[in-house]
Image (cartoon, rainbow, N blue to C red; front, side):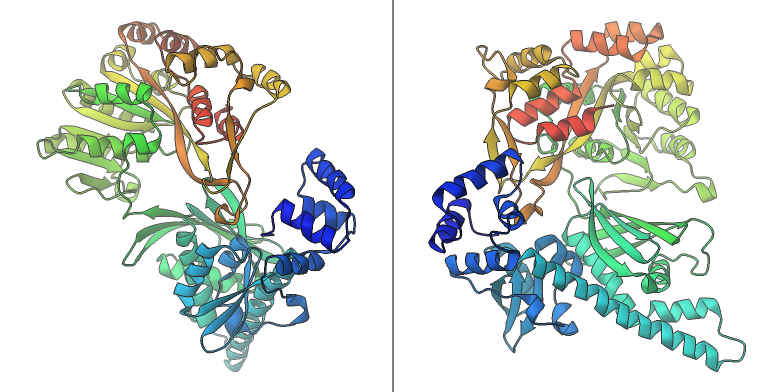
Length: 584
């Protein structure tokens, strides 16, 4: 609700629903159980959700409505706000006249979403405060409305089949379903609002009785829509049509792609289908082709890491590797390095799968294994194009690794990604692939290890201190004394600070602007290993990852989790996020 704790206390005391003493007891209970005070009030049956909403509306001088008393919301009004937006922002459109749209909202003071709906509908927004129960009642009507529409489509198709003696061709039937207006509208809504929410992936997962649609936002999957199972064949058919896939192939996985271009964005979609028990699952990866390359500072590289990268990419030849799991932002880091190196005096060529960002002045080649254009083959061809700088999307095999190393040895700057857990692990990984140790030692300049953490929402960020018992838990997994020493060395903290308990940490309380998660957008945490003479000696001796990492720490490398904790102190992310992504 939009009512803060003190206002809620005054409202309830004035209505004689609680006393000042019983309110303090309720607040203590909520704090002890780590629950919201409104949930405790409802559980104790001091008031129900609707009464709470009504009291809050009166105190805030806002209009209140119970959607359950209105019954069925007209479909044309309900669908003015698509389900993903309604679910994420807690809003329901339930009435309108010529110029006004009545909008039920969990938070009527959320001006940003009101402005967004106003621009979309070209109507004046009349906000009403609603309860969570009212919101759920409204959300269920999306399901009912769609189910009725798609039942009609299926019925029409079945009648059409019955009218024909031998039945219609299956492919033609699916194509007809894919062109139906409700199907087109649902797919357009899914795509449009995935772009609006800045999702990186869309998952469409068939279950026994329904279809679950989830968006990956800031690295975390969120349920955004539940669709009736009857829509599944038409939904899959529609996506296959626009991705240029075989519409009647349901037994084998397929891959395709398509693009959506508007005035303010250009988004490429990679589509993957796979048969599962209850139908075909579809996952779409969104790539923003209009996105600009960020700077190293914007990515989250602090000075101690940034200096190593800049120093090593200025060398006349050699390789820079970026490592981490899938989806950790490796390609974005490489594009940023490319943007630094991209001048008129050099020839830059890339071999990628896929091309995620278009960069002016750079020759970008797309891998195509179907015709034999692999990373290794493409790299050999690029070397005949007189390049100064080469970027390889991913080193996957011995052939690509050896070509990359020889390119770095013969006077080229080589940038590439590799899948390892940390920076130090990249060097033994190349040995495992089959590259000679003396070649690795003489060509590698630096290795970046990275992960992505969610940033704290700036609109609901609060400061707090951690308890000593929590620090004791952290000490079981991390060298906390070493962390404090690193912080002192890089002037993050003053010398007199002796414990983590003395430092400020930050978290997001959760608000409507971040979907109640407390997080908004992501940034990287990094470790940058510079290949010094001592580390070259270890590579030649086939030293294990642990020994290489130990030597790098001795020479001043800030570990990934340490970089994460420094970002916690600076208010960028939370301890929980660092723990989530840095545990191997």
